[in-house]
Length: 409
Image (cartoon, rainbow, N blue to C red):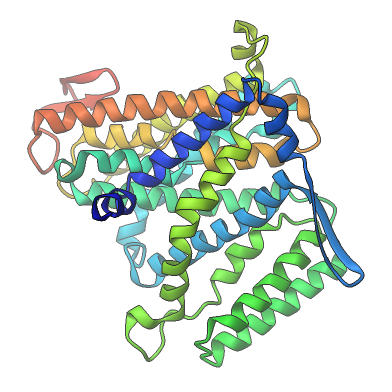
C-alpha cells in the first residue's frame, strides 16, 4: 500500500492518469461500445429544489459543474502564489508573465492566419492558447533533480499566468446573452463573501454555501459558470492570525487538490477526449480547425515563448531562470504547447452549438499536445543526459530549435 500511495502522490501521476482516461475515452469512442459511451454523456441529469430545477446533459454537468471546482483550485493557487509565493515580487513575475503572453498570442495568430477567411471557424482562435499544467509539470518531473528547480518554477509560473489569461478570455469572449437579475444575485453573493473575509471568518462552510449560490447565479447569467469558482477563491482568507497550515485557503486547497487531480480532471478528460475516427482521412488533418489548433499548440508556443524569453534576457528586461540553460528553456517552451484540458474546455465553449467542429477540435488538441509532449520530453531528456553545467548557457554557444550552434553575434 505504501508503494501505491507513493506513486499516487508523485507529481507526474496526475498527468499519467489524464493520459489513461483520455486513451480510454478514445478506445470506447472507436469500439462496439461507442453508442454506450456517447449515450452516457448525453444522459439528462436533473437537480431540483422545490419549483427550481437545473436540467443538463451529463457532459455539461462535468464541464459547468466539476470544472468550477477545478477553477476554484486554480484561483486558490494563484492567490497563494501572488500573496506569498514565487509570484509575490516584480522580479519573479516579469519573465514568466512575458512568456505566457507570447504563449497565448503566437498560437492565436497561427490559428487565425489559417482560419481568417471563415468567421465560423475563427471562433476557435483561443483554443491553442492554453497550457495544461498537470501534463506539463508531470512530464517535467520525470527528469527529477537533473533539471534546476528554478526552471520548474518558471514553467509553473507560465502555466499560472496562462490560466489567468484563459479565464479572462472565457469571461470576455465566450459568455452568452447576459441576465442582469442573475448577475445582480452573483454580485450580492460576492458582497457577502467580502464581508465574511473582512470579518476574518475562518469556518469554510459559509464560503462554500455562498459560493454555491454564486455558481447557480452565474450559470443562469450567461457568463460561464466556471468563473464563479475562480472569483470565489479570491475571498477565501489566507493571511490570518493562525499558523499558515491552518489558514482557510490552505485547508480548502489541500482538501480539494486530490479530488481535482484524481477525479475531476480525469472525468473531464474521459468526457471530452472521446472522438470517433470512423472515416478518418488525411483531409481531416488538413481541416482548418484541426490544423490551426495543432500547429498553434506545437509551433506557436515554442516560437513565441522561446523568442520573447531570448529577447527579454538579451535586452536586460529579465534574467534567465537560475542555473538554467537555453536548451532547457527551449524544452520547457515545447512543454507549454501541451494544451489538453484547457484547450478542450475552451474548444467546447468556442464551438458550442457547432457540433460539426467538436471532433476537429479534439483531434487538433490531441495531435498538437502529443507532438509538444514528445518533443519537449526529448529535448529535456537530452539536456539531462548531457549533464549540462549549471548556470548560464555555455560561453560562445547559443541554443536554437535545431541544435546548439556557434554564436556569431
